[in-house]
Length: 129
Image (cartoon, rainbow, N blue to C red; front, side, top):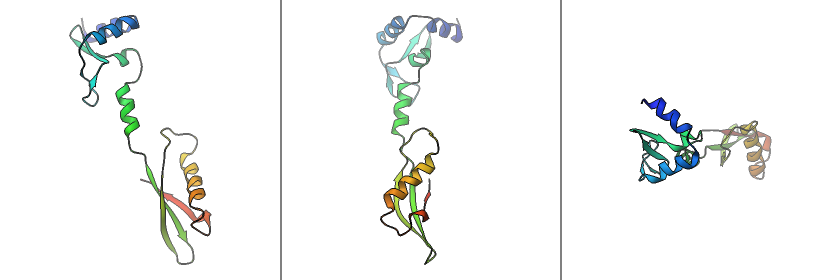
């Protein structure tokens, strides 16, 4: 049997049987990040990830994505009188996915948060990573 035939066989098994196969084996090293994984198992000489067979995303990839650092933008103010640019703070982008226009919303938040520090909030702008 080749890899694709074994994968086809696993995809057509019942979930209960798949979980029994995976839990019956000792925990092995996962392909992603070299961590111990209970979803990674051996079947007929090949190694498979249970989450890939079920068509789900890997829980370890999701946890790594959540651990990624948040992008930090610097908030600047352009002073027209002295023709200088002043750093007035930093703001974090907490959204993981694109919704509408993230940068526009982030600029509006920066203007709300830092408007008490400057005379004209319309001169606040962002520079990103």
